[in-house]
Length: 462
Image (cartoon, rainbow, N blue to C red; front, side, top):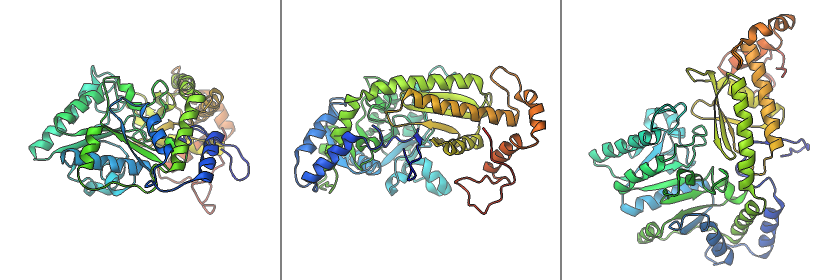
């Protein structure tokens, strides 16, 4: 990316510009169709049919009916309507820390948002299941069968709801949780959950808004990581579908679509599936195939994960590296045994990377997960550049805080003389910077703070 002054930034987080910022093929398709015709979806157009055909070839056969809309939030809202109309049930099971969109119906099923409202935030028809996180969740990597254990929690939720006379309309989950902390569900989890939900008369909604369109590399969709024997009832798409153009889609089965149509309430979307949007969607699919972006996700994703795992061996601040393809998370911890989240350290790193014109973000319940979900044209050189910078920043942090290195030696003694000679210039400033993020005194002068704040220590040198 380039700013208004021509300064170059490395974008490690933009899963909207899926095939790359301002890709010429996508721009050309958009301009060509805009010059010819754009209109609302009451006018039938070949692009709509062609795109629906291309899109459904990437999905299991039973997922054959498309509803085109304009954003991920719109897609998930429509998915809830489809699910509730199907059997007339109302209740929804969602995962802890989940985020599915900004409209009211989706805030209601997004603990990532409604938990901010306190006890009154959760509605009676919403049931929250444990996030299938095998690093810091209820069932961890040492559990003999975390997939079934987490699925059994969903089964218990259904049983308790039915005892209270409630009926489950849907279970909804991102195929891999993004805001929840780059969580990859254990294989077999979705199959068991779907079994329990179907038995209760509900449907399974796979939210692919963040992770779809080849990001995982070996598959086009994240839910396919669970195995060929798992097929969701509804799939929602957004963000990468139009490479920055506002478009999205809901794909479902004929049975669910017919139940929705039988309600007598006509569904129409003015801009969903318009000729320009579909031309752009087709161009994105073409680029993914032509540039072998799924293959790139495998090659570069594996290399990025390999580099990060080497850093894990070196730096005690790295507790876990997890990911598939170009969807990777680095869980920063204060202590590898207790797995205490290193929230301030994570924020410090992303701020310092930004100063070096590298864009990365932190997320998860504790905001301590460095998350990578770059454009799919991300290269091995890009991966090495950002990991080298993270290495330098982690080294400086560990020197400042006296953390132990990967070989078990304390960095404090190694750098004691240097720290004495330099006074409190670097180490104290890093410590104060971290304390500030924890809510204490030091005010770093950066993009988050106004110029009139005091700066009692020098800028951190890395």
